[in-house]
Length: 365
Image 1: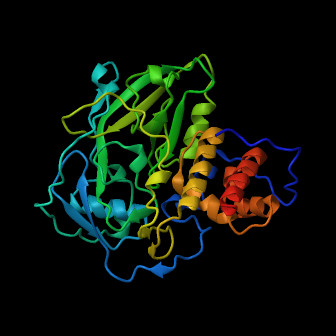
Image 2: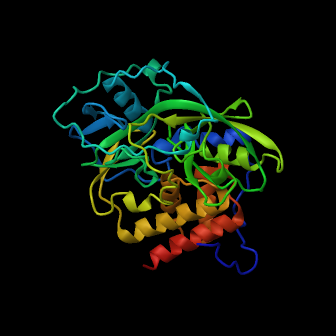
Image 3: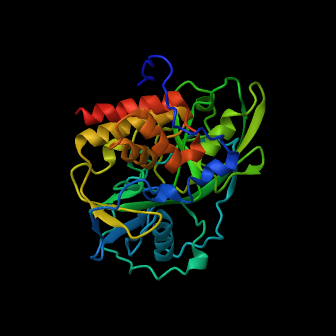
């Protein structure tokens, strides 16, 4: 959807504009993407019973079990503990001149339910750092951007972990202002490619694939950056000049299928109508009811607006924005709430107006 027509200048008089701060904006109030970013009210029920989730490595493994986690980082550390993934392991370097890097591998196999690994050993705080897991998908081992694990996990969901595979380096000529990339991140330090627009500059570079983690841009390591800063860095690159990307693709099984741009939205996979475990950056995880259809559609619209204005997709960020505005009476109050919670993003007024419209549509049913 496109931006809403804006009748004159929005007042937004109470809104305090903040200047974007390159990597400062990346922090998003700590590691807030992993949880509710502090804007959502406490969930209706703290998870008191032990919730056990089954997990596998997406490229193939026995089935393990994870439990007792409250954030994305804790979940990744638990999975790493189950499969004894060493933080020091690295993917093999692979030159971009080889054509097979232009394909993504969607492994298709049945979960090895008969081989269960024990629950993970506890992970000491000092090991809670970046590990080999790039991201996780729910209920499919495929590189399916519509089924990325976010801050909510269905109580019956099966978790597939995608780990680092081959490294590759590619040189790109920026012939247009827009590269045609949509960036997201895993909530634990790794930004990766969620969408490639058909016919775009990046679409012509077949070694760059959906699901690839962006490790560096022109030699600058961006591990730990938020997706917003990575998108801005790419946007700010000079037109009609070459730049270099170092990428890491997820480890794959043997089957390969043609390169896929995947779906554009994950909102439809958020567990509407079913119980979910809501992960939080601070405090315990909570068990919540599934989203209503109206709320899910509103969040999907906000996610569309994030891509339109900022070149990112982030269903948890969209959810946070919806929660910030659902009880506000006017756009000024909503803008102030956004500044208090997500001020480092310095959202433009036009974007705030369009998001307020999406929330208003949801309120009206």
